Length: 239
Image 1: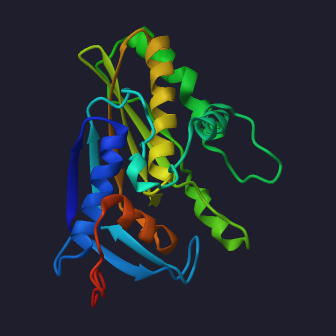
Image 2: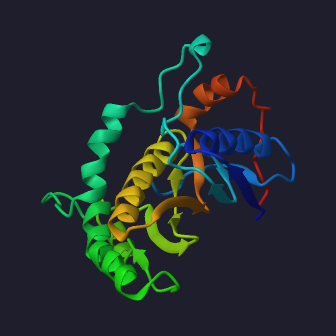
């Protein structure tokens, strides 16, 4: 495995850099990305292009627009729009879970939300304790069910430094094409709410994943966005 560090200014910049890096690395014989066929998971039998491990440092994640904008001359559909993001926010922030849902990010996040705010207010910023865990050990057993799934977002860690609230987030698997920008845009807005309630400024995001990928049905449009081509057989390893 070859970890990749991407330094970005905004969420759209991070998205474009990750996409470019993925396509670039998967073309190299010894690159930090691979192409493989999914055996179990979402879309079994489909191909994925995936970075081995990505650490994405976003210095100004609050800069608007939060979602990537497609250049008009490419005539490509947006990865998501503001309405979709607005509909996503209740899922991220509300503790309500529907009867047919195993979990929601909001259900898990809200368990620790107010405690984190109150703890920082009472004890101050110099602590490593305020880590909000989305994943649970028992989530893995959801895969025994025919429609089972477990959270892709596993962890939202927090730090206050220089009077700014920073979040470090980890995704076990992450759809780069549209999951990455929507998830980060939603998390950024949630971070802004938390920072305001604590009484500090908004800060940076560091996003980590060992499964940052694009699926086969997104590869063509991704190449169109980058105006690049994919070498035949790129990313097919012998391991």
